[in-house]
Image (cartoon, rainbow, N blue to C red; front, side, top):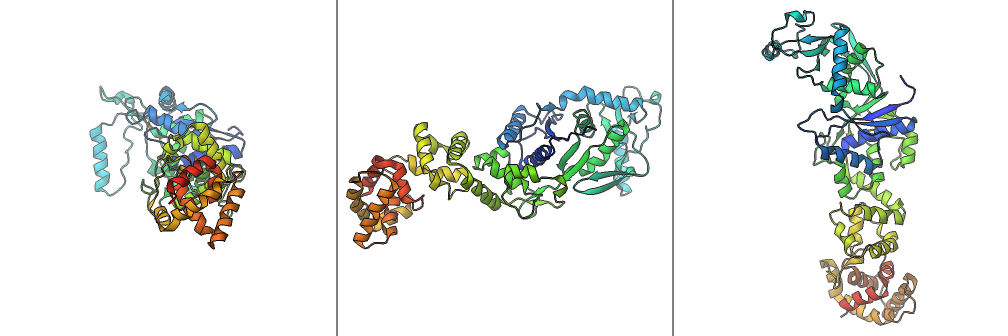
Length: 473
């Protein structure tokens, strides 16, 4: 076995890259980076009816968006079918596997007998030691492995510990179907061996497969990779993850406005931890991650925690970087049209100037785009009910009274604007908020926004004065 760690992510392209798969990819990618190894991508597309090219593209795009690109071009499992057949035939030639000519009727009979005797259905080995010359005419055989009849197979798992499988329970399972196509169990082993995979990190729903796969490795005389079966993700209520919990494709999280760095930070904490650290940078993930620290218990998906982590990364992001993120994903956001309501250079400029105030409150890029809507709103602004209450309750008179002082300003910036508004409030015996709130309502159509003086500064003299005149009594 090579000294260099080689991990792999091996999704089936029967749908998009779901969130559980994304976490499996992340763990594989992190372990490869931590150890100076590499992560490979294998598309397990042997189910020809359900595998689609758009799903393959969605998986690769999803990994790329998350920053989890594989280190080599993807491998198609379907295209390797001749190699899978070759290995199965090699095992027959070595006496480690055999041709089985049992008919569907015979297999049904075995199942019914097992059911009646209240035991798991097992193939009874009737062709294990028979000569193929006894084969019935016209029957295409399957190839079955000759599993040991006694003893046990031990899988030394880095997460689950030693897992023991009595060999009598593994039975002579099929390697190659009668039409010459490999079973999943067989194809995975051949591919992992040929690709040089040293560490198989995958969901613990595959743990029962590891015993049978170990038999194939041993029959071929190949090194058994290190196994690490990670717990599945459950919903916040402890039930198996479903769409209502967040079992969605990665592209759905992009549309919900999560940052790749935020989603990765959240995912890495589902089943793995480093002390009490909640916020973990990509660099620290690589430095700290180890599969030995993965928990055995199922992790629980919680949107509130994801929002909190993502909000942190929005606040920590550089303003220019956030503007780029917004512009890059606006076609995927449900409210992305907000960022197309002015020429791109205007959108970028206003976003950049407003971003210090905008990013403090937003937990997602959708919220960030929504809070930026006032920057590009067409006049006259649509005023929401709460803002209208403020304007109707004396706010329009305040706006009208402030206008002359603002129109007369020689310099237009947050400091000069604030000084003018404060002078007015003092003269009128008002608290500053009583003057600032009508301004906010008139300028944004809402009751919440970044600091009102920053809003006036970012909108600029002409746009600000025009909006205020629209609402002045």
